[in-house]
Length: 483
Image (cartoon, rainbow, N blue to C red; front, side, top):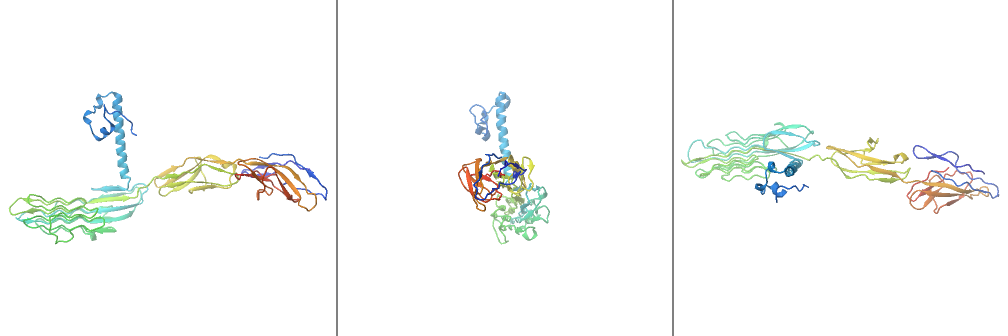
């Protein structure tokens, strides 16, 4: 039987398509015949001088400043050096302030506006009311007056939208018989803490702490009541504001002491009551009640202490700009096989888009991207992924997909059957190219691979059976099929 040259072409996906029928073996009745085909081939800071013998540390700390010359008296280069160091110092300080704000808390000791940061959807708000003033003497002798009440505490967690502004109203500590001011966040129906009561003039009746029951919030605590004074001895101490987890101190009207109430964690202490030659002391923010006034006999009047202002603290989990903790890496793969690129990102609300250069790859929107089967056109040096989070985006470095070189297979000869019906045919296959060391051989289009050595002869073949030849190298790359 005369053989024709074996040819193949490659389609757009890298598959090889025969231009003629597969290899078949002929037979003759008990006549030895052997024909060989022709051998064929297939396809810090800069060290600026701050004046003689003066270091940057001395400049920044203020040490030895009397020896630093005025900028106008320096040569231009030295003046520029000093300005450079000062500029860097200011930049460092501004960075520190920005970083502190970025920790996720903002404290208001007076009225203001809070704007929800980018990417933040939940905030925790803590509110203290203002403190009440202690009792003041306006008439009479030998009087001791009670301390003012401390402000209440309220807190809650709010679901918010980035960029939304909230009015912040901080209650003012009282300096009169009026109660300390209420504090609220947003509106009086959002989160509110009541101020402590002040003591009437010439009265020795404790100022009542702000009432949690009149506040608004998921968590609420009463402010502490003021203490009463003792005639001829002292005015009563102010009650503390509530803490973040406890009611304020001096919570009943039977306490009789000049000592200021000590607040639970987060609250403000009360003020010390007045005594001979000592005026009552104002409460401590947030929301401490003022100490009561005092007059002994016909002596001088000792004034009462004012209540302290309230406070509002807003806390949130900062929105983190997305980052890449494990970048994608270059990959080597075989034509027709599969490969996966992967990335690990950090941040909130992450989404992924893999790209080839600047072109988005359709459907590649997870932290990994798999190509299967790999076509010759998939080889590229510019695969990357864009990670988008609540606070921005980050793009990975470009990575490369390299295709392992394909080995080649050629049929150097075949033996036809010597007897009809007896599987005595053979095909000898020569492998070349590819990667690694060694080859395996297939006559069923890569379904199974056998053998070692090169060339390799596959024996026991039947007549009138189509055989498609491939070889595979040690890294798994297959040759195109022949024919």
